[in-house]
Length: 171
Image 1: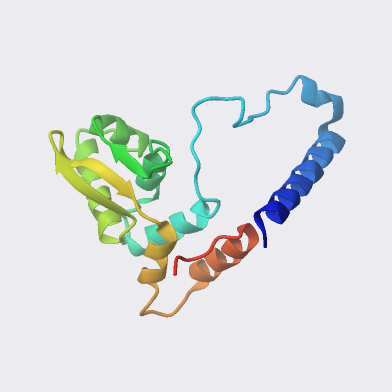
Image 2: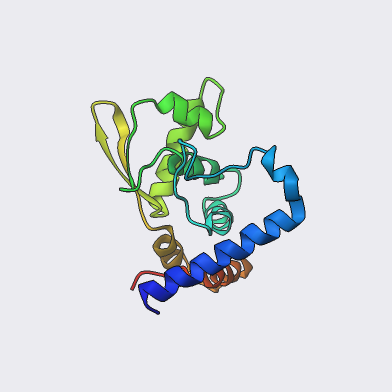
């Protein structure tokens, strides 16, 4: 499919959604404050398959050690280069849902698990472990996790959502 035809298709879908939105909310749209990433600062781009990825990574991180909230926090701090310089581990630990005396220690454990699962790669620096982090292609991480095991309902749900949004594994 050409870039031009993809843009045309996207424009038609956007127009269809806008029409449906107006049919459902009508004049009320003038007073509602709807999120628009083109008008508001403070947004990031995340994969549309993040819910499926989160379920898979939590399953593979082991019982009682969910990593998805830590991963989501990383996505909310990354720019389009896929690179994060972490200077405030306590803030990221808090954003990940950890607030006890051991918050940063627990956060580091989850980060190590994300690295073991190949969702991230990190380098230490002046601020210690996890000073620099790369967000790796999560679809590649999932593909590698399932290479030598039976595909389950979580994997199949990911494939279905990937099909819906046009996502593909890297070759």
